[in-house]
Amino acid sequence: MKRFLLVLALFSLGIVVIGQTANCYRVYLNNKNNSPYSINNPEAFLSPRAIEKRARYNIPITTQDLPVNQSYINQIKAYDSNIQVLSTSKWLNTVVIYCPNVAHIPGIQNLGCVQYVVPVANFTQPAMFVPENSTGVDKFAQTSTRNYSYGNSIDQIKVHHGDSLHNRGFRGEGMLICILDAGWEGFDTISYFQNLYNNGQIWGTRDLIPGVNNVYTGHSHGTSVTSIIASNIPDTLIGTAPMANYFFIRSENPWSEQLIEEDFWVAGAELADSLGADVINSSLGYTVFADFPEGDMTPQQNDGITGVSSQAATIAGQKGIVVVISAGNERESTWGYIGRPADAFDIISVAAMNKDSLIAPFSSYGPSADGRVKPDITSVGWDTWVSTSYGSIVQGSGTSFSGPVIAGLSACLWQSLPHLNSIELMQVIREHGHKYNNPDNDFGYGIPDFFQAFLDNSTAIPTFDNEQNISLYPNPANNEITVKSSNGTIQTIQIFDVTGKMITTLNPNADQTSININELNSGIYFAQFTTQQSRSTIKFIKR
Image 1: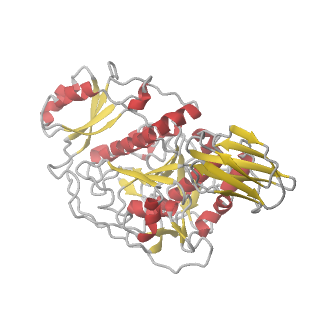
Image 2: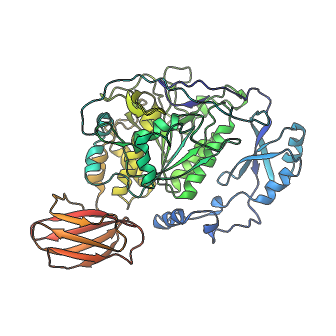
Image 3: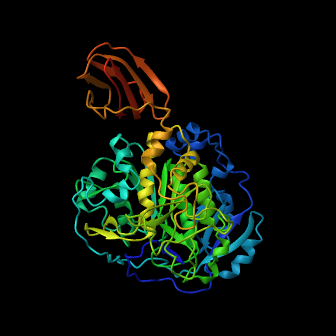
């Protein structure tokens, strides 16, 4: 069953799609022969950001990254003008089609470019998915605001010492977080999220559900999830990465529960990769499917290999993305275990607890079917503070909410440790869980200490406490920055890029100097200053 991993937010939605006779199929293709694309010209299918990231972490671009061969798609569509392509996967080399005439499937199966065909859904036409005006109804329990500097969110951040990481200046600047969810109802109209648009932090949206083209309608689950990461509401709700950039991807059809939704998840992960995402957050999980029981799996198949969403999650983690997956809310059900893709390799699956570190009564347990430690770690997903689509700041529960706490802090940690690749960073997070030496099936490796992870690994770029002895302005800057010391002559200035590479060394021997940054590429840099009395590091942004 497809799950929004949320237990106190129930939604009343119409379901258009009912039935057990497939008319949608996942077609596995044999190869990518004679592709018009080439790994020598990745600009045709990967963004400059994605290409730069692959080069930075020495991640090869392979034929797996080439888009599905369009000529093969054309052969399939030639069978019937009513065949529609609903989704494709370059990593798995599949195309998902709507084929209303089932009699064509044996012929498609026999095409030379086709390996085999798997039924994934049954949809009606023309409204395959969504009633035009369906909206979600939030049913959270409202509680009073607490008087902390972080507002309501202090407990869900401080349990990981994320506040200390923020105080060092790592709040997600320059990082891209892609969120795969079911909809962001109200997000674009809530007043306290407008700063994200004004600051250019919302990089875009993509709706992968056929027949729908607006992620801001239909469901509000993504609004609550994103609020945990992106909010910047002083004394009310501060997110775990309030200065990061965001891209919203609707991969989840909230109006039905069918196997095809895993295919949309795969497409979402591939889109995130092509954009150059640093972090994927997904509060979605798959077990069995009420509207398409042919697609049901068992906990014994939660091996990280069987589910296509799990396959894609593993690939994404290996291609340089920190993939954060909520573990699931199945503890009290007959299923019990984590779902897919929380069983994937090279990802972080997150269980839920409350602020007092008690495991949530709904949080799915491990291990994976092949015996690996799952979930990986645990965060606050029981009475977590979130925003509703109506702008109320309330408490909600579900592993949907523990995942985004970790996703945001992971972005901040990677910002502080850019010399680590995604696999290394996820391992560092596990190793700083309080149960790392004695993991269990509830907490996994435990509650990670993100600030200690930073301290133990911050060797590439020296960082020191800055007690306001040095000022740097303007920040961000276009052409020139000015630095000024109130505590002695600045003897040396060293500028590092985000990978820890030293760009330049200056010896101003003055208490104030200006630095021309015209030659720097746009991005994040660190300026380290040495005076007779102190050393300090300030992060700045070149526009």
